[in-house]
Length: 473
Ligand SMILES: CCCCCCCCCCCCC/C=C/[C@@H](O)[C@H](COP(=O)(O)O)NC(=O)CCCCC
Ligand SMILES: Nc1ncnc2c1ncn2[C@@H]1O[C@H](COP(=O)(O)OP(=O)(O)O)[C@@H](O)[C@H]1O
Ligand SMILES: [Ca+2]
Image (cartoon, rainbow, N blue to C red; front, top):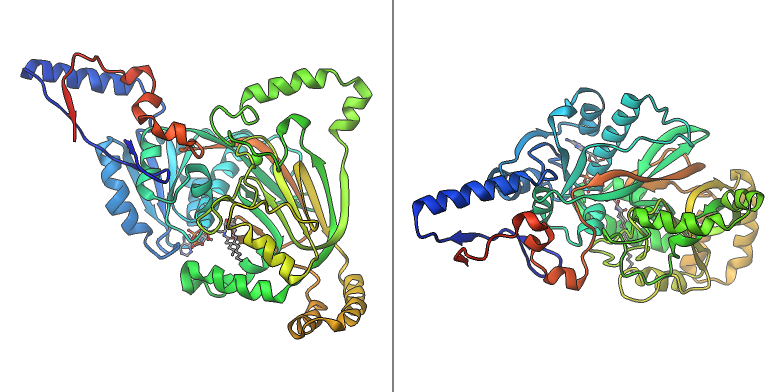
């Protein structure tokens, strides 16, 4: 494996020249033996392909770019091309013989990943007798790793855990057996389970974009641009109450400039992080400790967007993501509240998702790292009445704003987008489950890490004797 630019990996060949046939056979034997010590590397995978994701290239991408690499790496793969939505989820939940596999691979976008996530997590809880309807249930982590071959529209989960949306790079991360733990949010409504989420839970702006874009799915990835512009012009805001349990103090702040975000050595995501915290925590006395651990903060307001980013949500549209310092595996999600503001201010904020400026540095934006939160929309009728009187006061606004204010009367509720799927309820409770799943990935590598050979990362097993004469093509 060779690293190229922009976090991409390619396959590279190494040719060994030996002085005799016997020596050559010895080397082949030793190399195969050493490779067999790499128990992390998968040998058998279950692959689901969504043929309709993104630009409908999933099948071609798998057959032409990924299957030949799996074959070379002696990985066997059982492939299922899905025939309907939720085919992969249902198969994983009830039928799949999971004992036969070292991992599950999805070829598609975030929606397809979400199917695999639901299939595996639900199956694991059912097998372990855990009731996922209980919001405070302690969920059992999944034993199988998940690999993502990006072939969807946004592919944010792949981008934010690998650093690029390239099928060959993802296939190579699977082949070398990389492992990246990931937090999963559970979403409940009135104490009954709705969905799991790993990337963005968005109410208001992003929820509206998703709801609108579903009607134009035939446009492929471009549907988000059209709906993005329409939703921005609508400038709808929504009233409600957000209550949340803040993260423990050692988990950093969403406005930190963290260099180790999501990396294997990241103290916040690793076990050391919890130990550091335990030490600090001991200093709090009994009663005070219990209060601090369960103190809910409550914020009431009118919001253009409420976003819970369980990871950075970096993607090609937003290379740093909605919350650049969010961790992949710290047990928290970053709750971003964008209050009602002018259209121009909201545009400035959105623009910062696409460049290096700090998107939280606005008076109308606040961000909190949280373990749990709840959102309750304001009661429909009350909100309509108040919006009506406010709309009249606003008659000095530009024509487009006046027209839209009229539209706001009927749109007091938005919808939540949950990794690109629309939730049926606005009143939700969300809890983060730390490191519930593991991906075949390693987080986005720093520049220095990228200079290293992937062989160095594989550790001492592949440190070949220097007496061998070899050339690299
Ligand atoms: C002035 C220009 C403003 C442009 C702002 C663009 C900011 C984009 C941030 C996107 C964050 C996306 C987080 C991930 C969401 C995906 O899970 C979801 C489904 O993905 P998939 O199944 O692969 O289609 N995608 C979206 O929600 C798309 C949002 C696009 C909003 C413009
Ligand atoms: N064979 C199929 N036919 C129709 N829909 C499917 C099929 N397989 C999966 N899906 C659904 O397609 C939706 C979008 O899939 P995804 O791969 O995320 O593509 P995109 O990124 O373009 O949204 C998901 O909700 C998934 O459940
Ligand atoms: Ca997290």
